[in-house]
Amino acid sequence: MSSTRRRRFSAEFKAKVALEAIRGEQTIAELASRYELHPNIVSNWKRQAVGNMAAAFTGASEQKSKSSEAQIKELHAKIGQFTMDVTMDVIFWPTPSSVVAE
Image (tube, rainbow, N blue to C red; front, side, top):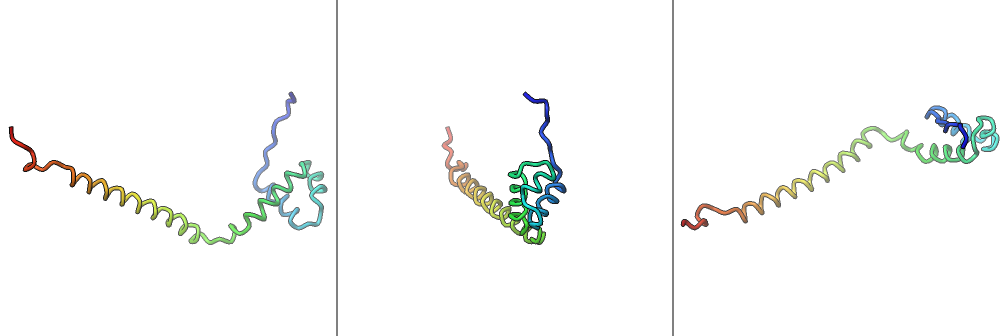
């Protein structure tokens, strides 16, 4: 086995390489050679950058509203479960008049 360690790249570096790939001034192979990367890595970073580009323009309020909608649904489900629990307790809870005195 080789003693080389796996390289880790910062988000800034990935963005820089992906942006250059998107510009198209150099081919993927040229960029890979220039930065000593495999061409598949450059292509993957480019694909990720293009795919996530819309998220950069999404407002914080839109992101919050999506998460709050999910939270509201979860809370409604909990309220329904608690209501059912209380209803079942009231129906099946023995009352003092129903207990037979010995």
